[in-house]
Length: 224
Image 1 (cartoon, rainbow, N blue to C red):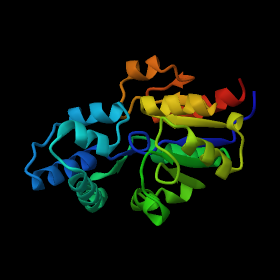
Image 2: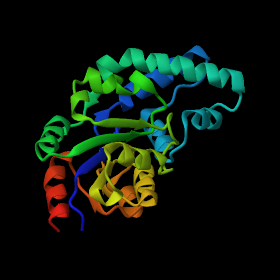
Image 3: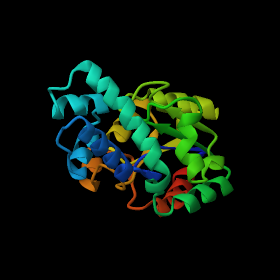
Image 4: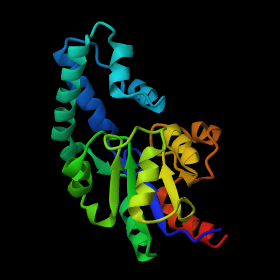
């Protein structure tokens, strides 16, 4: 088995908690269109089905036309950015885990379902002062959304490593499916949209209950 030299993380739900900001931005925008707001748990269920925001809107509000949906997407993005500094937080243990992995000499990347590109994809990492830990960030806006493996494949390439030298850490069913398609070892953590049982149904290589367990797991994989 190859020595692990790189760790790739999903972002939302894995390293950062953005669900409150996402839900607030969604419902603030919904109200402008005189539509019924939805509960954060219902929104979580949609996200766990790996539906795009556009698909969620079509399901919930079939009266919205294409033009309305495109305007909604822009307005919600602006709301989300405005809320992000106050309502997006790091997941427990994220900073110390990133520091520990760097101390182990790991290369660290992010493969996220965000559609942002350029400097925008680093926004939350800079706001939370963790941007210096990462060697690369690959988004769905640059490739394809998970469960497609494209963002993972590109991330591994940008780290200058091979699939068997990396592990992927994610919180959703889409993460596990994408990892399996990419041929990378998957460590699932039930800190986001999917429950422990839902993650186990997708058969990740490992499941940990807390990010704090990650550095030890990676050492055991490398020496296993």
